[in-house]
Length: 133
Picture (cartoon, one colour):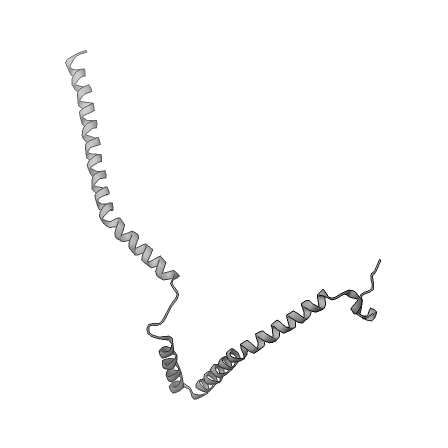
C-alpha cells in the first residue's frame, strides 16, 4: 500500500469518529434538555388529568352554599324561589317518611315469603293455573 492510500484510510475513520463524537454531544445535549423539561411536563399533564377527573365541589360548607344559592335565586325570581322552596320541603318530607316505607316493604316481603313457603293445598283450586299439554 502506498502512503496516499494509507492517509485516505486513516482520514475516513478520523472523520467518522469526529462525526460520531459530534452526534454524541448533540444527543447528550438533548438528554440534558429532556431531563430538565420532561418532569415539569409530566407533572403538569398528570395534574390536568387528575383535575379533569375530580368532581366539582364548591368551596365552603354545602349548607352555606345552599343558603347563598337560595338568596341569589330569591332575589332574581320570586316564582323560582317559591318552587325551589316547595321542592326542598317535598324532599325533606320524603326523607322523613322513608323509614316507615322501608318497614312496610319488609313486612310485605316477609308475608310473601311466608305465603310461598306454605303448602299448595292452602291455595283454592280456582286460583291455580291449569296445566296445558
